[in-house]
Amino acid sequence: MGWTTPWAPTRAELAACVECGLCLPVCPTFRLTGDETASPRGRINAMRGVASGLLPLDASVAEVFEFCLQCRACEAACPSLVPFGRAMEGARAEATAALAAARVRRGVAGRWVARRRAVGVATWFAALGQRLGAGRWLPGPLGTGLRGMRRLRFRPRSSLGTTHEAVGMPIGTAALLAGCVMDPWFGEVHRAVIAVLTSAGYRVVVPAGQTCCGALAAHEGRAADADRMAETNRAAFAPFDLVVVDAAGCSAHLVGHGPGPTVEDAVVVVARLIDEGRLPTLPGHGTPVAVQDPCHHRHAQRITAPPRTIVRAAGYVAIDLDPDGMCCGAAGLYSQAHPDTSDQLGRAKADQVAGLGVDVVASANPGCEMQLRARVKTGVRVAHPVELYAEALLAFRRGSTAATPT
Image 1 (tube, rainbow, N blue to C red):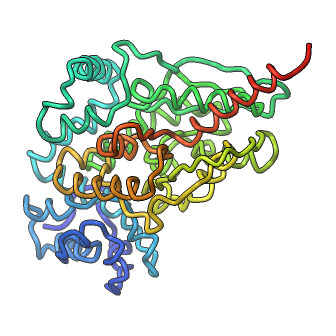
Image 2: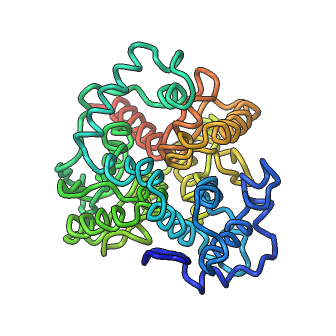
């Protein structure tokens, strides 16, 4: 039958793969299973089969696509520069269009996360679950998810619609993406980014008219929903020249699908401000911090140096958690759809943390943070790199003020 939607993988995308196999060693699902259909090469061959009409797009073929973490490690290893992430999003869009079960299951990614009232209700129940200790007795991925969350408020303080003036000489205005779950679940990250940017001279605006970045919808095959979110965000961010995003998955998506202005990840912006001398490098104290590279930083955007620059500027010693950059297994909603595989990858990452013997892990993606927090030993902190820098900067300035003679 072939493809039926405008988002399907193109002939050029599929033809770019020469089946060299260099993607196999870096693919997490292939390394776990050894199954060719769980490799990028096998998935592209499945896409070619559907495109040519040789394979029906049934549930078994859809599962070949759905078992992919979309970590995009294969893109970084591919000598032919196959745009695998884009092709996989298109293949999942086809599966969603073809299979009613997929449409129902993936509706949460396309519509639920973009409705702030629905996210608010989920946040309230998650906060209640935390206080009841549900993370210890709920089975499967629900319990694991609760254990990985930060302490939630029943009514989180939102950054939406707020404006924050620059401290000292202004250098420009930056708009901040609030996101769908970042605002209610990771508000401390937003506040840290705002504090650091305003300290450097940026006026920061969090436009009220924005919505979810659309990454979850695109990854889960809800391409039309992702396009609608992109249109909403283009209108909301049109007045600004710079959009700052403090979640790696969101920044990777918006760089390719987002608003017209320049979109940059917060770690890139803050690291640049440190390199330019607009933000200080603070005295070192020798405390080691393991830096975990989210896949949407390392593989999708090739961002590796900025988080380490920020950690070192905060006075810490930056240590690589995983030089190979293997996926932690969070991958958006993957941990709910494939809990066993997700847990296996998450535990491997937690074992690496334990092997380093550190008490702090820096991770710039909410899913990775939750995946790690649910599995590392008690007492190990997982935080955004900019949070660590904001805290160190505040402590340094308070100390300097206290030491200044009156």
